Amino acid sequence: RGFINQVDMALNQDMKGLIVKPDLIDTVFLMQWYKDNATKLQNLGIGSTVKGIDLATLKSFILHAPALAEQTKIANFLTAIDEKITVTQTQLKAVKQYKQGLLQQMFV
Image (cartoon, rainbow, N blue to C red):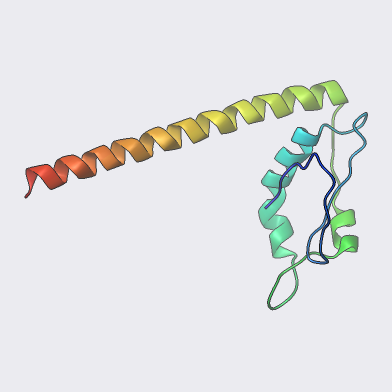
């Protein structure tokens, strides 16, 4: 799991924080990259109780990033799609609940 934090915080040894240079990397673009590569990163985790990825392995990942302006455009586009997916999932859940309610009324 990942998130973009905008305030100071402490991390334990099982968490990793990336501090980006805002003139080089759009943080939302980086988060989208992370979400796309999350399974790959999780599969590299080691440990029996809490799986974690070591810093050397994390640093070995290469992020091919276009110019900052293009990163921002991509990040905004992907974020808009994520928002549409969330709305659609919410609507689907509501329709399923509506159907369930109808079925319960019809077959009592």
